[in-house]
Image (cartoon, rainbow, N blue to C red; front, side):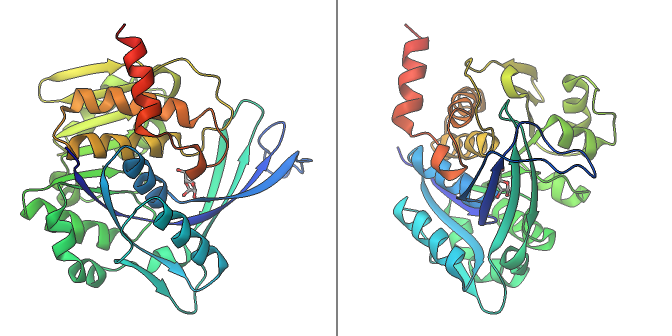
Length: 306
Ligand code: RIB
């Protein structure tokens, strides 16, 4: 069974530098390489869901420039429906400046550009698309009022609403109450709950659940992910890999979870599959180029059960 996923989010051109370490304030480092890759949390998650077999529609904006043309081409090749992806005049496509160190860890500064023009009016214009998808998947690289408008629409239509609250921003109680699944990493969980970063993830998850979402997932990198809902808290392990570039790993996880839930799989199953997808994405360079297919993830899951 194929499910429909509507992604509302960003598309960026990623400018990626590899360096021996991440620069500290005031430091100039000599980098080792420079490459550009298609990315943006919205586009990454849309492609991740499509590669897992979902029928995906993406709502967003790119600029009328070479990066925008390239991103549309990449998304189109993946079979993502772009009828609701608009090209905005007079503004640049979003861009992300990324540094990756020798361990594959990264820092990212994203400049929104055209992504920041996604508006509640855009959302009203694609209400039919949002209502007809089993799952609405969003992140926070587009304006919050658009995210809230979409969440209200999908929730009102009885659709599942997933928010990957990245990058972390304060969220209204109203929005948190509309979410079926909130996905964050530990730093984002700490920021949303205003707790120290070293708070145990179980405590962060319980504090997040109390804010209103139906379920909370905290991604834990090499340790997998913690899933919490009214029935309790569980850690789902991932597979061991040698990470070379973790950019897009979280997006592989989110897109996969959305695709699985759109097929009506359980949350526990969706997270198990998502953890494998995230681990595989960390083994390859680039955001979109690193996202695994359903076949690649399936092979690993099959080997684990034998
Ligand atoms: O999650 C990774 C993404 O974050 C990158 O592709 C970059 O564009 C930023 O949006």
